[in-house]
Length: 571
Image (cartoon, rainbow, N blue to C red; front, side):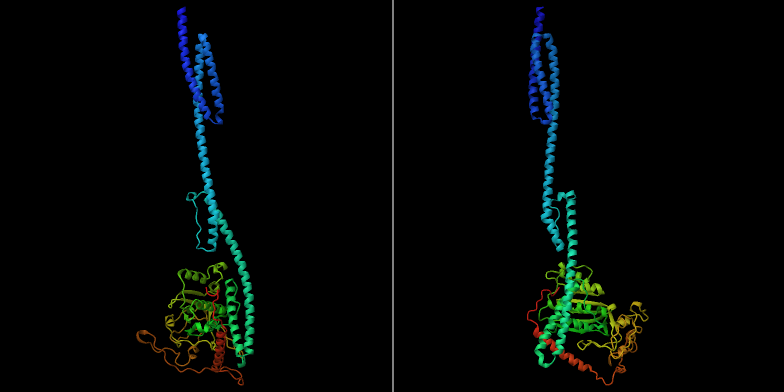
């Protein structure tokens, strides 16, 4: 019995040592668990409480082991329970550690997401600042001047994102709003300018009538000084009318003046007279017209205005000693007015701008015309678009600019035979040849379209004959050999004087037309009228107008100032 007790005590001691080691291991594990619990966040508080319960149970197990020294039989069972509880505590500790690692991983992910979100917010804030401080001001400048470029995103990584799309939507909205508002403001400004220029032009025309009446009232030799002053004022008033007319037309107004059917060469002479210092600066016009080319009443003033603006522009951009030449030609499609200067010329960008404005196909705002606005080309473009003309500019042979006004045949008429250009109009440069190469190239039986069919010439009614519009200049001749076509009549050649008309002789060498032969012409019949009324001969009228023009030019030269740089002149 004592041996059994000794064995039992030895077993209890062995078991006690074993339990002590396990308890030590359990304590170490509990310590590690306690340290792990200290790293846990608030979400691990529940597991920390369980660990404390396990520690309490372990302490109870230790207490039971101490009691097991006294009660060996109960010690083994309590030790098993303690071991089981220790395993559960270890399992719970591992689970807590795993959950702690998961919580730590989630915390790191949350921190990373917060960092990325903060970085995105910083990018969005920087991109918004770039939009407000750079892109929107650049867009406003681009809307004012198209050569200014609008920068893109500051950070290319945002391309295609919601921020990029939202910023583009903001820029589009601002652009649309600015364009609509600028168009509205420009239309209102053009309406104001149009009304103001109409009033200015009306008052200037009244002043012109008053100056004309003063010239007629004080035309004697004793009023020479006064007449010079009046002629100078008349020239300045003419410049005011042209500037007001150009500004008004550029803003959508009409030419403001109406005329009858007028000889084209007379319109060119009138356009020259509207230019400052025209007698010193303009050479011409050279008249290369072959027939009595006139301009329809509806287009007379627009063509005169276009020509005067081009001449003024050529004079303004040329040195004071350089001449501006002008010539009038017939073309296959109508007539052309060619203006050449030897001025500073234009660069490629200026030629492109001139072509855009002179075409009349693009809307022009006042802000696009500079400060102060140069309205000449814009006004010409409006007239070109309204009347179907064409104005082109290119480099001239003199190094300056050559401007060509192409007048279509629809705006031209053939003036009646009982009319003639003014005495100030130059004579044609060369004699008229009835058979021209252009007529030889036409078919013999070319049909005449209804749009350009000849209209009958109405006979003048005495005692006040008025010019009546005749057929268009594009009427096809019916007999190329004689040069007589519809609307021209056989008197076209007979009225030119001897040696300037007539049909060609027999066919020349290699089928070419022969030279025209001299033919006796029928003398022109004197106009019917009162036999007692003395008629002024052309020589007397030419002398009177020549004297008047000489005095007018002298007065204008003395009245004009030495410095004539107009900031609004030129284009």
